[in-house]
Image 1 (tube, rainbow, N blue to C red):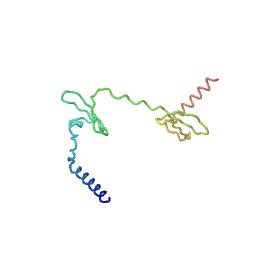
Image 2 (cartoon, helix red, strand yellow):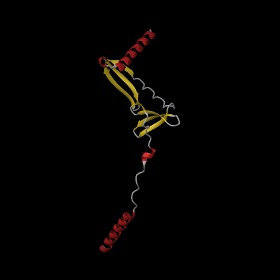
Image 3 (cartoon, one colour):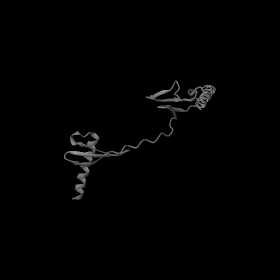
Image 4 (cartoon, rainbow, N blue to C red):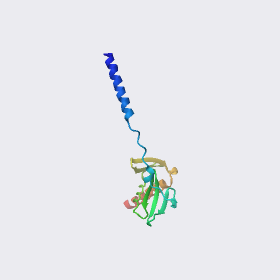
Length: 142
């Protein structure tokens, strides 16, 4: 019985070794340099990672460096729509010299509190607009 188990194990290992020996050599890596895009040698550098070049047919191309290599777009082609400006934050309330702000973010609403004396430029502008809207609302109610 034990001899049969040893024999089965030996035959299994021998078959696995034979299959390994029959495998073809690994294929060579594909030549990716043939299909990569890169700006030509005479390209004009517009900014960091952005180049302009004219091809033999007279088309002007813009080459932009991306994390995956260069991207090539024809000059004057429709560019992606500019991102909409992030909506400004709003003042929720003012209590004891502290201003509470709120802003919508992709992850939900974000709220924070700052002292009036520590407001930065954007927060100060929002605070002043809030005060102006309160003053106009009080005048309208009178």
